[in-house]
Each structure stands twice: as structure tokens, then as C-alpha cells.
Length: 89
Image (cartoon, rainbow, N blue to C red; front, side, top):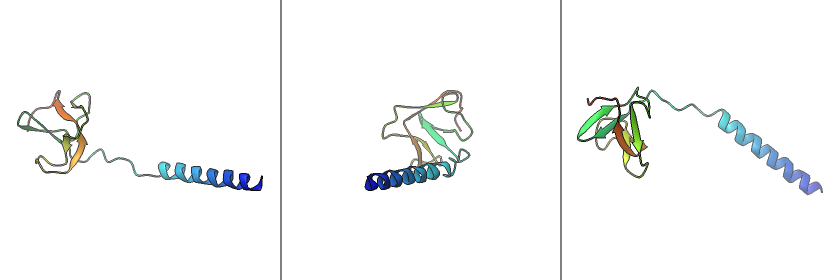
């Protein structure tokens, strides 16, 4: 019985630590630059809203958005970039 109580106590402490870790994580930086490439043109999606200004269809291994308007730039999200209201740069 004593071992069961100790295991429950350890589990509770572990769950509390997990909840605290998620509660105090840094928020996602939504101000970082994002660029999409479609039909040979780059689009600035930095301040754009997904679903309203652009879409990232079929989130596969293809890159939807990059950190810079360059083919080898750091990927930001996966999918196929589809501009809705954005104009090419």
C-alpha cells in the first residue's frame, strides 16, 4: 500500500511539472518574416493571415513558407503555398 501511494505521489509531481513546463514556455513569435513562392514569384506573408490572405495546402515535405525570399532559406512551415489576396513582391 505504501508503494502505491509513493507511485501516485511521484506521478502527481510529474504531471504538475509537465503542466508548469507548458504554462511557462515562450509564445510563438508571429512577427518573424515569412515568404511564399508560387508560379515563379515570391510573396511577403509576414503580416498576412493564413486562411484569409494565403493557404498552405497539403502539408507534406514541400516548404510553404521560408524565412527569406530565397530557395535555400530556413523553412517556416510545410505545404504548398497558395496566395489568396497577396500580391507578388
